[in-house]
Image (cartoon, rainbow, N blue to C red; front, top):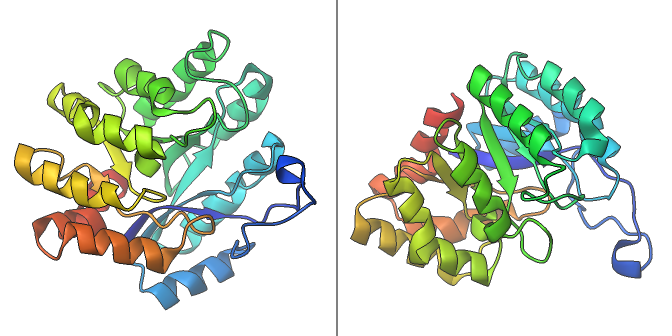
Length: 270
């Protein structure tokens, strides 16, 4: 079983949404040893590990890039995804991250607009171009957060599929992130992109309960998309056992289940 999206690194407490300083990522792991212990306990055979983030200080997320590389180079089960940013304010940090992108074990670049910027902001376009150019040059996947309620809703990040996914695999994390994103993607957009030759992939972490079942039925009905969906726990923000049970029930134990839990990960990251 393979996990296509989980995080490493412990964030400081922060007063989210005007409340007291808290640490909601209560199962976050600080060390490679702790991460490997989790993989052993779960029976996870492969994992893509990405820096933890969420506190609105991009330097914290960037600081975990070396840690995820260490993890990937410590255990062959682990692949690393490096934190990058399209914001012009993060240009120098992103340059340092991209300088590490050729290291052994690095298989993805992760960007999110939750810490600022948006896909259609002209100020972000030069850095987006640079990130995707490096991904293409090195054969990497680009992970994009799609949660609603921020500037990274599927209508915004869908532009990245339109602009870049002819050349670079784009992994839409959280399958649109909520009701509107799920309906837009399953209703047409995800399948339209695949039919148009876009290299688009997704995981269903955080997905509302109806979405995995509906997506599985539409894949069967349309006959495409079976090789574009991956299991992801999103630990520590997701719940491994809950995500696994829900997607197992939707995908079943046949060909689709094998692709979702093992084979598509191998295609992208091994």
